Image (tube, rainbow, N blue to C red):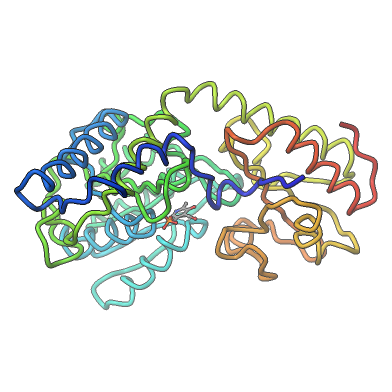
Length: 381
Ligand SMILES: Cc1ncc(COP(=O)(O)O)c(C=O)c1O
């Protein structure tokens, strides 16, 4: 049996998403910028997709700018903050995805831009009092804090962080790549200026996503050379990807609470099985707690002779999971997130199991048995 428990890295596409995309591969090929009927067909489909996505977020369609995914959306937001909105400081967390971290560090190389970290409490959540202190000097600032952490599942309080930013006139970008389609997000009620989304984390296609840009914020070209996406991102649109993204988000939100309940039950079973069978097991940053991202379980295993080979042996047993973020899975380097949270301990090893609505209880039981056979302990399932 092959079991896929790496859904925070990517998710399989749903057949209904593929069906929605197929006509745009087979028949509707017109360039959306063309004024003839072929172009009008694809242009209309893009605008329909934009309206559908915007409705799920309770915002105006013009606030959705399609991108090639989460990395580009994160890049776009931070560059806009510094290059177009006059921010001379970027504050972010040491636990952010590298799409934010590397971009912020790069922008911070400029002598005019200061780059700094926001303090986190022991659970990995933003310390609002400290953020308030940091922003109180009034320096024009872009704050970037992800909603759900892709490695350990910490959920940040967007309302509290956003309100703190508003109080001090700072801009607030949030990477919602791991939570979009998994949690209801109402951007007309949240004090958020930018938010990043990636289709392939919610059973949509790779290479497709968007940046939400709050209404009223005018930002210039992130990619020059075309007037697409209200001149924010030039280049012929990825129509197939956009159609797939909109369908995936629609399907995710249609039965969102049912999906959440299903995944929470799987995760609870995994926590129960591991707790019963692996003495000394821990869950990083409270990822087993009800307020953590329900799709992610970050497990900290005690010392064992096979720890160095654990991921590889799980893979041999048909269990695909990850040792850190997607880019570092399989790597022996301690993850920057676990290091930042002081969770990397010599001898112990961390494995991330991540679930989707397509994961079954049989998958979880198989993974628990695989852990048992590798570590030689009795698992009660
Ligand atoms: C939190 C987070 N942000 C950004 C990204 C990058 O998204 P994409 O793969 O669409 O570029 C990922 C993907 O691993 C992620 O987990």
